Each structure stands twice: as C-alpha cells, then as structure tokens.
Image (cartoon, rainbow over all chains, first blue to last red; front, top):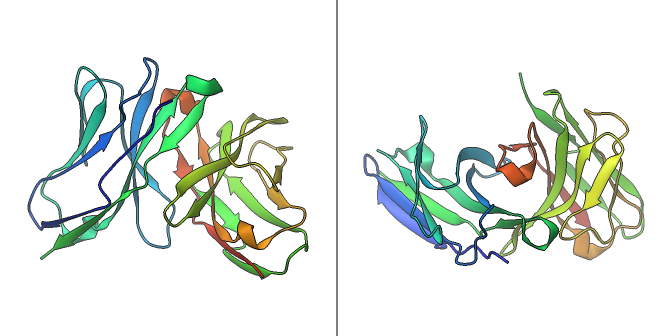
Length: 111
Length: 115
C-alpha cells in the first residue's frame, strides 16, 4: 500500500523556483499522482496530475522519475500569494482503492 | 460559476444531537466525496459516491451516514455526534473517477465542534 511522505515545511523567496518532493515508495503500477494547494479557511484546489515523466500546465510542473517512487512539484517564480499548504495525493488501486494523502507541506514565501 | 457549496460553514453542537451538513455541486459531476481534515492527520475520506444511489465507505466511515438521492446533492449525516467528530469537513466532486487522478473540486469547508 502506497504511503506518501513530504516535508513539513519549506521557505523560499519571491521570484525563486520552488520544488516540493513527495515520496511514495510503494506506488503501484496503476496509481496516479495529484497535487493540491490549500489556503487557510479554504478547500484544497487542484494543481496538477501525472502518471509518469513530466507534466506541465500554466501554474506548475510535475516531475515523476521512471521508478515513480517520488514526484516533484515545481512552482516557477513564486510570489507571496503562493504561500499555502501543498498536498501530494496518490490515487491507489491497491486494497480495493484508496486515496493516500500526504500530510502537507507548508510553503512560506518571503519578500 | 462552477462551485461546490456546503452548509453550514460553522456549527457547534452537543453530543448526541443529530445533524446534517449539506453539500451541493452545480457541475453535473457524478463523483462526490466527504473528507475530514484534522491537524497532523491530513485529509481522510469518509464516504464517496459514484452516482445517484451509489455510495461506498472511505477510510473513516464510522459514525457517519450519507445519501445520494439527486446528482447534485450529497449530505453528510451524523446521527449521534461525539466529541471525536470535531473536525473540519470538506465535500468534493469530480467529473471522472478518482482512480484516474481526476481533479476534485472542494467546497469551502464546515467547521464542526461537538461538545
């Protein structure tokens, strides 16, 4: 059964690229990886989803190595408004289907 | 505007007093879920629904009930709330099955306190 592990917190500065890595050592062949962003007093918001290699959209990129045991969310040129908690999610088909959420990474962007 | 709404947003109640948290989505999504979010434990799925009249247990279903009589609505029912159900609750919907990594749209949350 997949378990997701991500750093508790990270700091960075405006204009920098931020990379948040999630470890999911036991990910199964059919599992997808999804990332969400959550601001205080709001529900999580979808950022990006991937299965393998690299996926890019207008706000982020997701890098998944060939062994798929980890994934890295990359936020280019962050701003203060990117301060939030970021969650990694593995949609696992194991054990008759489960959603394996990471505990979240609190990202603080400084001026 | 595409959205998921929840009511109430805040609720303080006493042990044993039945309550219902409503959830509605206007995107014609088939798939809906309820989660609870607790510090240090992250998001845990309580129940989910694949379509009208089709529901299944998530990771932490004990003490909760759901119903899906209409596509847009997915209420969460606590028949006899207890203090350990004090939490932040989120409803979510998606167009495609969650097993495909489908984007979920979350509601604004309901903060429940059971004394």
